[in-house]
Image 1 (cartoon, rainbow, N blue to C red):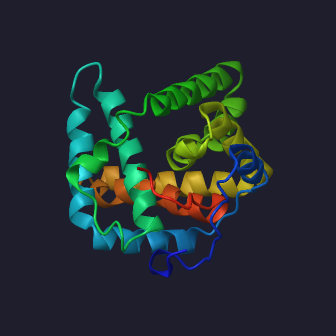
Image 2 (cartoon, one colour):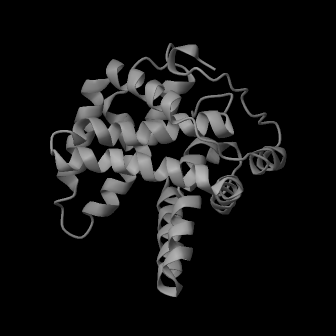
Image 3 (cartoon, rainbow, N blue to C red):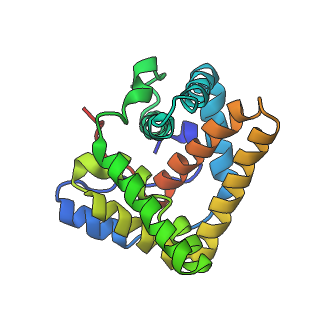
Length: 223
């Protein structure tokens, strides 16, 4: 792993066989290293702060587009996850994001389907009982980042959902702590308005760094 952006060494996941990759990912169990993840995310943010502020301003702007603003914002966040994971993987070969990279999520309709499926499952859980919905909200929180990272290595939409549920369900308390604390950090930024220029990118970068440490990363770049 690149020491520049992380303290915990992690081996890359073998990609020769998608089935082996899926089995490998299903064996993972979530753990919490919030201090290290925050530090790594902050180092990335400091190096590329101008691009991340641009992303946040775009994200806020599209929310005002009637009917489709939320969908565009969701796709922008998927593009941000792609950028964040690439920056962590190879800061030397991928030294800085460019404007078009934030739109990487747009061709990947599967990411939108995963997000929709995730939302439907959470809503159904909330309708049945509040606790099942909250549980699903937590254990499905890594479904989209997993597909962004491993989709082109053979992990499908349902696979990303099942891997997220499996890993976070094995250590739900740690997963709950991470998601709640990271979300609280995000909302602090919204409350002070300009603070979101820092907290939104940091919120997403924390998911990227956590994915790296818990699940590993691909050996090769997305073409």
